[in-house]
Image (cartoon, rainbow, N blue to C red; front, side, top):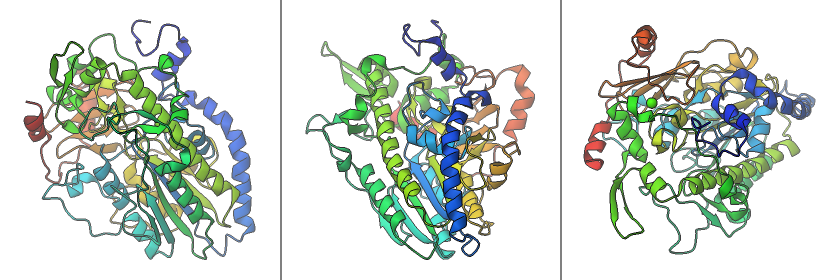
Length: 512
Ligand SMILES: [Ca+2]
């Protein structure tokens, strides 16, 4: 048991086991059970589509939901034993879940730019939130422009593109404000450690995400002759991890489960480049901290700061509270879709823009290309999908645009890098290519159903076998037994990558 310090000794082993083998198909039985209820809903929705004359209006309504910084800590992905996400789980149960889904880049701007335009970061040089002078501007239509050009009424609200709903749409909702903690108690700051959780003394109705859901419900209920394309972006669990207190109360501090840690130091077999990447979120500056005895501790990594400050559990609590809160808002919107069918087939897709670490690999937040930074929820409900099904093929956010175009019955544009997942919706075992995630020129991760291979800009490597090592603790990149598989995976790394700022230059600047 000492090997798994994830859980307090009092906790049952089954939860440990559940968290440890989260990728096996057999683990999704519980998820399938929920599907029975979902199937009934599905039948009602399908019947409504048929009654309303789908033949005359073949294009379905499309509802695309993106959640900000949501990792796999949702019930259906079993990324954390305490996850509370009943509404996201119910959506997964009503359609097809893709447990091996990943982002194109582990930061907001590159992730969303590549997703909304369907073009990989290594083709444009849009690798980071910070803009690089030599980025290639994209001239092809975004997903929202594409649907508008194809006769859809487009409603885009909240955070869909980086910072907002984008500029294209018949209705656009910019970011509504959130209440803040009392003056002097707000620890939030982009470059500060992510221990900014705060239980707000406020109601859901005052929160930005409540207003995003409210706007989305109103858009949905608005009648239109045209088919509807909605892109709806929710802000939590993005920092600041501040939501109404009732959501914090669902995760008592003395019951928090930290991520599993290996018996030996995970960093021992990691390249220096990877360790430096792990030290701060998005390779920002290291932190100073005033200790209780008045001394100043300097150059602490995010993880060292949070551990020294005794904030690990409270930050986990705040992240989980933020997920429970946003799940509730998503649920309000999903309820509205159910209550008021519009007379067409409704296709719903839900994703996040990238994963998030809470101490795994002694890393926090995003800005790396490991499993926990890149893995995202990804689920689709459509008339063609059998409720409660699971596809274990790797997919990514590059596939969103071509998939939605394809499911809408439109010709998939040839300028898109991704590939529609429509074939998998009826044949989930149909094989797909490996997924590619980028974090700067020359920092690339290849994920197949079994392996993750990473090569960094300095040539250093990591190789993880998910069949035996779902937490990516044992780096096999230097193992002579794995030379052949490593070579195969390396061949999937794009040889031509658009130029970009070297991550090393950030290390040189911020981690002296
Ligand atoms: Ca390791």
